[in-house]
Length: 516
Image (cartoon, rainbow, N blue to C red):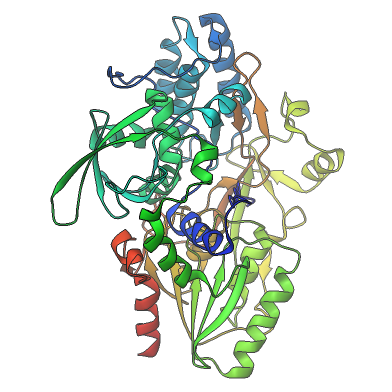
C-alpha cells in the first residue's frame, strides 16, 4: 500500500544533524508534513492573531465543494463505512454541511472538511491545504517548538528559537498563549485521520513540527509565544519565545538542543540507509532497520541479508519498524516470507467500490489500469468488486523466502508503523513469529484503505482530497481488535528523558530478551 512518504532532510543540515533529525522523524514524527485537519471552531484569545486569510468562500461555493467531496467519497472510497456506520456518516455529513451557512476563509472550510473526513477513521484519507494557504503557512511565524504528543501531554523535543535556553528538551508544555495544552489536544485529536480507534497514529501525526502547523491553523501566527512549562521535578517556568518560519526552523542551531541531537546521533550513526543490517552480538543477535518498504535494491538486500543470517547462524533477530510508513505491497509481503518456512496468506481480499467512477478523468487512471480493473476483478456479493490475484499478486498464497530466518524475532513498533508496516506486523503476529515491543502500530491490524490513492482538487476552495481506492483485508482471522492496530507484548512508550540519555528503551529490552 503506497504510503504518503514525506522525507524531510534539510540540505543545510550537517551530516550528524541529518542523522539525528531522521531518527526523530522516524521515531517521534518530527518534520514538516502538511497539516491536514483541525477543529473548525476554537475561540482565539487576544494574545494571538487570527490566521492570515487566503480567500473567502461563499456558502454556495462551500456547499458545492462539500457536496462534491461527499459524492466522491461515497462513490469511490471503499472504506467509508468500515469503521463508521452509514447512519453515523450520514449524520456527520448533515451536521458538517449545516455549518456552511455563512462566508468562511479557506482555512475555516478546510477545518470543516477535515472533521468530516476524519470521522471515516481512515489514516490514508486526507484533506490537504490549497496551495495558496500552504504557501502562507510556510512563511508564517509559528510555535517555535517541536513536541512529542502522548495522551493529554506535550513534551518538548527541540526548542527552535535561536538561543532561548529556558524551554529545554524533555520539559512538559502545559500552556501556550493562555491555551491549556490538554484543551487544545482534546479539540485536535478527533480531527486527525487515523485507522479505526488507534490513538498512537494520531499522536504521531500531531507530533514534531506538525503541531506548530496545526496550532497556526487554529490560532494564527504570532510574533511572540508565552509558554508555560514544567521540569521533571515539577518546577514551573514561563518564557516568551519569538515565532519562527519554516525556513528559520530548518536552519535552527540552538545550543539547548545539543545534548538531545548528539545522543540521537549516537543511536543512529550506524546507518543512513533506508534498510540496514548490523550485529549487536556477532553472530548471535542481529538487528535490521527498514524505514520504508521501497527501493529498487530492496529485494536483493532482503535476500542477501537473510543469507548472511543463515551463514552466520544468527539466533535472534530484531526488526525495527518504528516510523515505517509502508511502501510497496509485495515488498511488505516479502519481509514476512523471510520469517517463516511455510506458505502463508498475506491479504485475504481487496475490495473496490466501483470500476467505472463518474469522475474517472479526475483520478488519473491510465488506460492500462482501467483495462486491468475491468478484466481482473469479480463482483463482490456484498456490493462492489473484488480484485483477483492477477490484478494483485498479494492475494495469492505466498511462498517462504529463499533463506527464511527461524530463530527468535523481536519487532519494534510505534504509532508511525503504518500502512505496509502495519500489515507486516499483523501477519507476523498472526503467524506467531515475533515478540512485539514498543507502542501500538498506527496501521490497522486487519488492513487499511490505500493502494492507488489519487488526489482530487475541489473546484472552489482548491482543497486537495486524497482518495484511497482499495480496501485491504489482511489474512489474520481471529484477532479481537477489529478497530485496533497490532498491540505490543511489551509496551514501552517513547520518553524524551531516555533519548536525552542516549537510551533506546525498546531496543534495549529486545536485546535483553534476545540474550535470554
